[in-house]
Image (cartoon, rainbow, N blue to C red; front, side):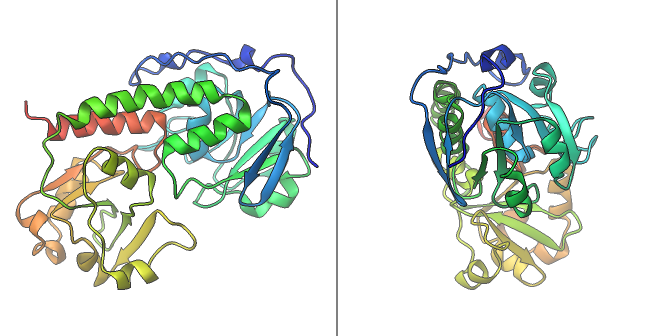
Length: 330
């Protein structure tokens, strides 16, 4: 059995109002109770862990998961990061959609890129959160990390950010924060759905490589696909032969397209470019190997922002803003 040892009296001392993020609506986090429903058994892809009390020093090795932990009010003290100062990351290497929240909460950068167990150990965590898949997964260090503190493995490639928030809420004792974030977002999404004028359906939702040689198509299981369906979009299904052989390892959220399969896999009547801007739209429209596709001929190609590759409460809110700008008549 793995247990958490108490190191601080209150996790709430580390919390700050999430409403400080300029592009997010104000989110009031209900206080968590350190006395309720502990110990807890939390299940994950690598089995279960037992937490004797509410975590107070959480280390996230996944830059993808950190945003959701921040959104629910969990006491994240340190996080892995990506390359700083690029279109998706700030000067810390934290994702831009939640970078200001992380600065206000004084979240420390553990490392850039590859996970480092020594850096994690130095923070003396009482809960370590790692991603099961993706470029920010530290799964190879699981055995080492699990000797430092209870280590929770989380899959984010086959569930909505809302379900991920609920799972992390239960693991951290911040269920109320998770429900507050979800309620605020879902109310906004529902109001937006009734106002959208959808482009020709079905749509291919993808991340396009600007060199024109490859793309990753979001599946219906992806958080992006689930959100689009929540808003009334219909996702095009790539041919079965592509879906069967082109997914990235064990991931459920992406189908990889390249070479001659690129055009065949983009079989929607509209193309929605995630992790992309207007320059990416122009690059795709100029690709001679895609010129015959109906959405290219009809200019039904729409960029939805650089920060939409990994969805959390913050980036999902930015996605709603992009959809509102693109698909509500002015």
